[in-house]
Image (cartoon, rainbow, N blue to C red; front, side, top):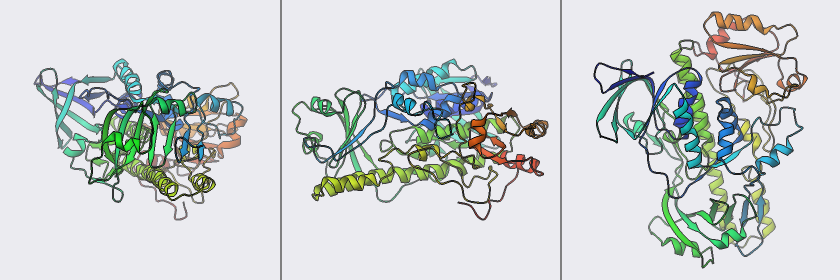
Amino acid sequence: MIEVGVAATVLRTPVLVVGAGPVGAVLALELAHHGVPSLVVDRGDPPPRHDALDHLGGRSMELLRRLGLSAGIRRAGVDADAATDVVWSRRLDRPPVLVAQRPSVNQLRQRYATVNDGSAPAEHHQPVFGSHLTATLRAALRAAPLVDLREGWTCTQLRVDADGATATLHDARDGAPVTVAARYVAGCDGPASIVRSCADIGLEGLGTPVPYRAISLRSKELALRSRGPGLSTIVVGGLTLLSRDERDAWVAHVAVDPLSRPDPASLLHGFLDDGSLEVLGVQDWTDALEVASSYRRGPVFLAGEAAHRFRPAGDTSDTGIADAVDLGWKLAAVHNGWAAPALLDSYEAERRPAALMDREILSRGLETRRRFARLAAAGAPQDYLAGVLRQEPHVVDDAGIGFGARYATSPVIWHERGTPPSLHGRRITPSTWPGGRPPAVRLSDGAQLFDRLGAQFTLVDLTDDGAGAPLCAAAVSRGIPMAHLPLTDPAVRACWGRRLVLVRPDHHVAWRDDTPPDNWLTILDTVRGATTHALPTARS
């Protein structure tokens, strides 16, 4: 897979992935899914003393399901009966103001067991501790024949060349420098990204950052006050407490005065009257919520926390996993020769706006907690506080938002005129509107429709006469891999909205219509990045 050059210390690879955390691992596995080898290097940081919980959303689990990873992650994750409620309180010794209930995975499975109108997900969310997620994905990397994983290797320099990039790596075992020549480099190396620094890409924050202190602690009192089995979040005044092990381990986040360095214990005792409290560690952070000014510099790309620094305000890898899948299939398409190089420009065009939108949701969540603390301190009554919280979409079930993300301005989507369906916060709105995720449906034989989609493009054909077959043949004749999936299932026809729907490798709709179009070749060139399709003037 990796070609050894004339000098023993020169390696050549189509894609160098720097960082083997969840995002780098998913990117390498996505490339392998499309037959592209990669070299993955990771400096091998020691595991954190206090493990963080990663709340993977249902959409991320759907993307991971495509790669055969969802079942293993669930085995490594938190028990399917564990709820993850958020409790809002003035004080721990008073009844809660509001309990925002997030059902357990098994509760959601029961809720949607008989639902087959496109409003049910193919996968539900999965809380999993970060070390367990990393270990599961790292094992998948080691088992993948097309992935060359080098642990204990650090990237120290990166240079863009005429035909790719050259990186200097150091092996921790002997410190010897190794040169890697790659057609593409993906920086998945976290918030202090060396790749981003070498590519001279800056970060853009959101307003004036507020400093916070994260305090890892043990508390028997909090364990007694949690709401039974599960992983709780307790917002008490201006303090946010996150359960870490379903027992007595917690992380507390509290805004602090930037000019002082208060003792962690004194910060906590202002909210908690707990003689058993034990401080385990402290980490300072700010809610700058920075996003890279660009996701690409020539053959160098950024993904995950290298592109958007949302942790620990955001407790999920969802944005980064979507980055990895989007970038992975597009790199593979260009490397394999069936897509135009301009397809890679659409990575930033799709994923950077997604990060900016996710940032706004995170920022609103942080402000909600600060507003709650101010109102509680001002003496606002319980019902008033609860009413304010119920107006916040992220406080209630937001499945419709998570599954309803749409690439509204992507240059490689064949967009339509008109108004797309409105998103509903609490439920998925079934739609095949271009740019969005199509509805997940169980077929009459019990199989999940998403599992029938091909690894590359899939033309889902709901016509009576197999009208999509010639369209697929035309695509294949031009070297574009496309599976033809004829279906007559009534449940699919009822919610897919069109008889011909072209689905991308990442399960986003690229085009749809009821009849074969006269400009099919132009549509094909658009979705593979060979031409630009002007956005309709009337669109959302």
